Image (cartoon, rainbow, N blue to C red; front, side, top):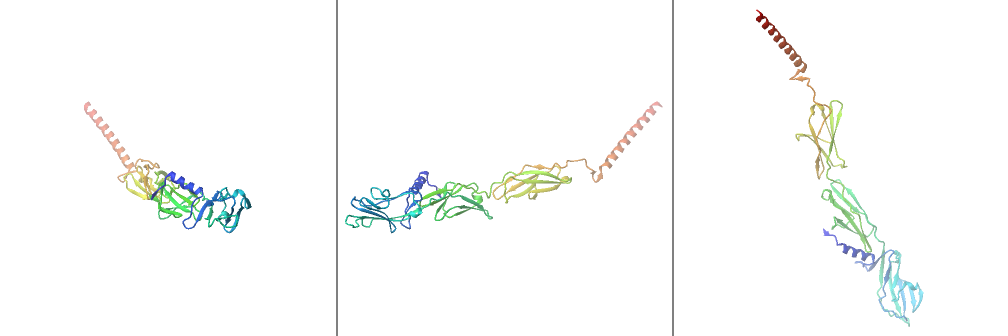
Length: 325
């Protein structure tokens, strides 16, 4: 990647466009922007006694015989004989050729240099459209017109790619800013920066608990972000896997005091929730003990207690009788 040019360089670059500048490398055009002005220089020292013609392609657009204007307007040519073009439109494009004639009607200017003027519209400010693909990549597409040059920037650095669409692996450019610069020989505009939103680091999930009737409890794992590529996994307090998916359902009697966590992940990060415990039912007095009804134990214990009390009472009575005898 190449470093982005300095601010001063960019200013000079843009000013050169706006002041109508640039000769094409493949033709002899001198470019100018619509609505601007341009002066076609007469590279000849004109005398007052000489006549001047300016042609656009083959048509005479200005003719001054000595000091008298025959064709065109006097203000269209300056004191040096240069042709002044204002409020340029595309129909002003063409080849402008001067001709100087002396008093004897002879062409004394020789082959004076002509100028081929090409009038172009300024480019519109572009925008970048971001598209996520199924293979984990992201496409950035620059809106451009015809015959415009594209330059891509990532985080202030110029990229090598020059095409309309730029492709990157999404997880490699999570927080990078992309913009495209569109230019033609008369102007340049850069788009607002755009970031990919195909993949974002996972946010911390939250677990909610819902009682299903009297026998089941459902744990639901949720995150605020919208992402079709999230993976959900469940663990208990001993870090033992309990299942996958956004919900986990268990019988309440089996998970009375068990803590559950959900882990949410995508291709670039993962987060785990705070622990959650069911509140649908709490520990209750058992109905059985060692396979025997708890009421048997209670009944047996009460009977034994009564037997002990009766035995102790009988013993006390007998002991008192013996003392009397």
